[in-house]
Amino acid sequence: MLYNSLSDLVAGLPRHYRLLGIDPGKKQIGLALSDITLMLASPFSVVKRGKLSVFAQYLKELSIREEVGGLVCGLPLSLDGNFGPAAQAAKDWIMAVSNMSGLPACLWDERLSSSAVNRFLINEADLSRKKRDEIVDKMAASYILQSALDTLKPK
Image 1 (cartoon, rainbow, N blue to C red):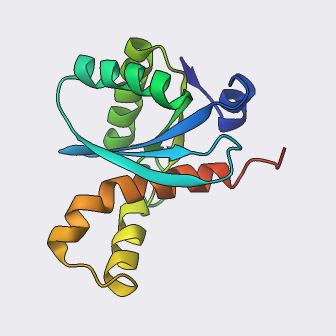
Image 2 (image 1 turned 60 degrees about the vertical axis):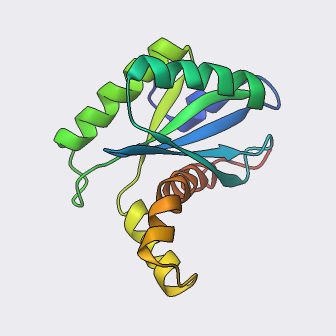
């Protein structure tokens, strides 16, 4: 099920369940987990992009192990905010993932998240391109999830 807003998704979460942030790239998918208070996002892992059914099964197992109750997927809107082909592809993909995994989801504007993370990793962490490539997707997922969590009212 795809929710129209983060607050609708959170309203249906069981108590003490987490959200999983997703940055769906062309080659790999970055994942981040919230804490149970829905205040802090942390980078979790990177999964190679492959068959949708395999990824959905992975999410089912992960949701049980980590008590994940919902998905927050990055939505790549155009810089001017328009809903283009990339945004439609992300929406279609997360709808299929949600249906196959049984986890509810919502979309979150991810404009420039990867650029912001790369800038940080270059300027602040001084990481090489190879090291950045290993972590940028899960860091971007964390950036997306944290920006979503920051809009929630404290409980």
